[in-house]
Image (cartoon, rainbow over all chains, first blue to last red; front, side):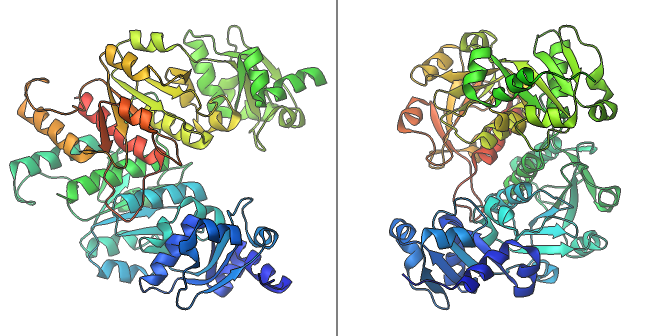
Length: 284
Length: 284
């Protein structure tokens, strides 16, 4: 077992802070699931992982983490060293230093995306992670975080994505000002998820199901947004919802129905319902 | 401003612990949203709140909390006293001592329920809260936690329900052994949400939409579960999913489709998708 010097331990631990991450363009993935997904991405051809630090115990339990990987250094460390490197109380024996993986908006738009989740000023790392995970499950082509949203590389946000951060392209720090215009130019409709929206998601799903069952061509009837068309969903800040500027820029404001007594939907719940509605409409 | 004695402060603080809660059949709701929802339930005729402790600042910001309420004592306290009473670092100036509000399984089944969420051995308070909130949004008639699930009255679970705990009946500590039988006897189909299920939720939704659009009577065609029928969804433990016993007891195992690269769905995401699918099928 090698003993990394105090300098190296401190260097890794500093990645819990935003300024060290920015300077080094790297961040920390903690725990076997996140590290496994990071390594999988790396092995499939996108350089992602720089170093892995793990205890013997963790490697015994998760042997796939110890498989030699081009360009990745694996260091065996003690549980104490690992705890000193990690932001979390229980890193489960393994952390990886990863390269930042966000891409540019141009790259995403060039790929003819059909489903995008846009987080507008979402501040809570747990909520951002939940939405990213829901986007991954729904097969979204990208997640965009606008300027003013939480830093997705902060350890709590990384943890809450449970590996989904390594599955789909993310674009960070996008100024909202011309985002909707750029999306529309790329043929992507912009739908605002809004508790007071005038379009009802159930009605849009019914219309989409009726078109599918009738076998009608995608552009032969009706008005209003079609869930089967390429779509970017805007999800707003957890306390204030979408700002006026964001609502105004959207093609339509869509209300997720609340059938019970809940006052409003959690942003993670709303995103799950909206993204799955689009995925269902698009994938058959 | 009255100064509650150290004994009273300690009595309230002890409600963070399970044994004090059990002995006194009461628990703590923290923060203005939870306390407001508890008071609303109380005022609508179900005794819920015993005492409210709040700072002057919180009452100035949330005057509805200070409205006199039958049977509820309001005490103004300092921020220090409030912090000593509360489990959370930022109780936002108000806590309420509430009576436990869970009901019996018989009570729920007697009410001809159409949609129920069952948490089977769900251990994380945040996950339990997310499912309860999703059940509330989807208009579920009740939430049932089986024996071995998290204590829903623990402060973290209460917080994570964001007030939904006061919106719909909950049944706690139900032994799983005869639950499915009891549900079926009450005319409620039992569907297991399972990543490896043989029924596909999308297919069930399509069949339900086709029946609705064709205007066919609810029982004139097809086999397999109908989402428009009274349904209880079983959601499993976050690490291990549903146990064999739970899967076997269900009428059908239903798979929520994963369109992307995510390995599995978070229990909150799966519950949101399943409960909203049932709500959509049932409510038109």
